[in-house]
Image (cartoon, rainbow, N blue to C red; front, side):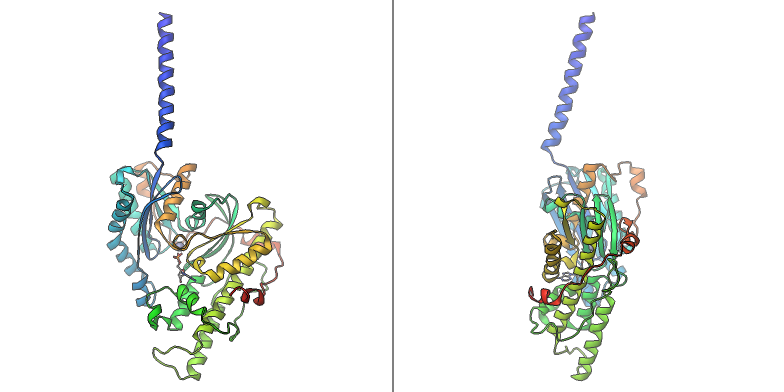
Length: 418
Ligand code: KG4
Ligand code: ZN
């Protein structure tokens, strides 16, 4: 009798071990796949990424042309376009991956921060997919997703310094863990992309056929390449004496407005006319933005050194967000990185601007750590959007307290890389 029980027990243990191994084996064979949804502003993006970082499928529908024609984003228009496009974008992404909803392990969606009407469309759609497909839900912070995308394309170990420059944000932060951020600086007024867009509109640059329907940053970067004298006009470098990592772009923007106003008067330009020194204005503006961003980033590096927050072998600056597509600004950052002995990591342009891939990847990072994955349908139903949502713990007062001296970046140094 005893022998029989013993044998059964052996059999049972064997069975258990087989099951365990099978589980391991099947997990190993079938990578986790997460579908990411992005609708925080004016891009409807859906993508499927697996836990090896492979983009299996994606689709993106940009509303930018419509908003450029409207002179800026009108939130209800953005919402209606998201509603109009999201189902098709999702179907296209699944089709390009050759997958069905049943093959997806979880749905990740941007729920904060962003335009409330836009965020709401993605959140409702994501929760609907969870409901019909019986999937877990992973709510995502848009700026955390921008910051972590670099880890999908390159080996970037934690902790690292991140600079996020886009149409809605300007943030410097220390990323300690995937859900543990420390804010070192932010913009006190406009975001840099917003300044690029406003300056481009003020210059009426979109009237030129080659620039019609493009974004403000891309057209200014392009126009600046034709400048023969980036120093023709004097632009201020904002807040050089404030010993913090905060940004301000409204002063530079106002300087451009004054220059345009003067030139329009001097050369009697009205209506759709464009000022004669367009290229030099673009180059001077971009130079000033680059110097400012570089200077504040350098202070952030000095602060991290001062507080011993980044090990010597991890000195990495990740730059992302739409403005990170700008090659001149990247070169300015490279100058700072060389001086401070940092490695610069910049994801490819299509991953710097808003997309569903970064949301799916953030979902993968959270899935791996089992952090913020909601499985209970009642809890999923309760997930709401947050229009405003500061990134991480506020260390801005700590940076100010540290009172770190930091020289500005020399114009000469930057002109040599133009
Ligand atoms: O990250 P993003 O796609 O959307 C958010 O704002 O979240 O960034 C869009 C912004 C726009 O303001 C656009 O003018 C700016 O990124 N941008 C650029 C460049 N390409 C896009 N700014 C400067 N230079 C560029 N090449
Ligand atoms: Zn963004």
